[in-house]
Amino acid sequence: MTDQPHDLPARRPRTVLTQISPRAWEHAADRAALNALRAIPGFDEVIRKIMGFFGERGVRLIFQANAVRVGPTQFPRVYSTFTDVCGAMDWEPRPDVFISQTPLVNAGAFGMDRPFIVLNSGTLTLLDDEELHTILGHELGHVMSGHALYRTILAIILTFGFRSLPFLAGIALLPIQVALLEWYRKSELSSDRAGLLASQDPIASMRMFMKLAGGGDLKEMDLDAFMVQAREYEEAGDAMDTLYKVLNTLGMTHPYHTLRAAELQRWVGGGEYDRVLRGEYPRRGSDEDRRPLADDLGEAGRYYADQARDTVESVAEVARKARDAFMSAFKGPPPSGR
Image 1: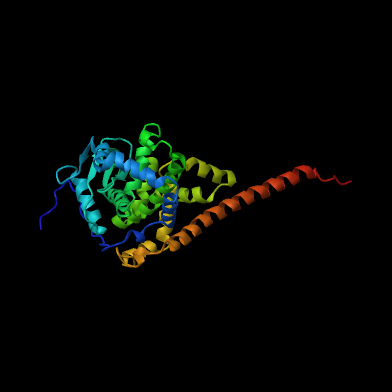
Image 2: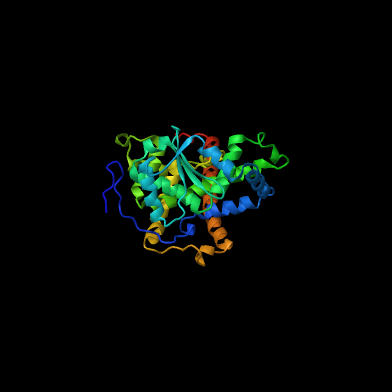
């Protein structure tokens, strides 16, 4: 066995999650949002027309025309890391990975029949080796869950706009775009879990969110304080804050990094992460992998019900405070004693 080149990261042993099914990490709201999206009138036609117009080769050309494909001699650090990721997730065939010269830190999984992954060059500068495991595992999670097709459709719609896609004339695209964005955000919560399972380093996963939110100088940041901030974002505020949280994310493709960190920490704290590492997870092709849709809808219903309950409770709190303020204003000062 030969030593690795000096410029490659040392490989840390990771548990191989043999034949793991995406069901092991998929968020219930992700599956519910995708099923709701598929039920929108015209959605199937949009998929068919965009796929027919661009085709697999056209999609690849859009995303890889000005990028470098990762290999043993091109970005060997990424190549070695992705080898570890695919090994830990027990996934073949290995998707292509491309590096795009873009300072904005981001990554994506795209394609139709043969999904591929694109990393912006700014991501490589920002993230250390363990965090790179996490983000590559995140994108592989999208591939394994079959997300790449729908993410590509949304990327094309957002890139070209309605007016530049005349073959979609007559289709009500706005509801489809809104529903795609809602699903896209929820799919990020699923793949955040996949990223953690690939890296098997919860601290690095949380640290990645902190870096994505505030940059890469760890001497100026504290992970514990960031997680407190994440909990405060979820728990603090009144009804107006809740409304702003909804409105601020309607046009976004990703949830806020603080919310993602809190959501992933909740999954870890609930014991699911440890159960998967112990081997307690559905295998690809098993009966559990083909769980009925009703089970997904039940879980998603509880997730959205919890969100709605929190919103209603905050609205009720604002109403109570307003009532008390109104009553106090009209009571007048107490009579003075003589």
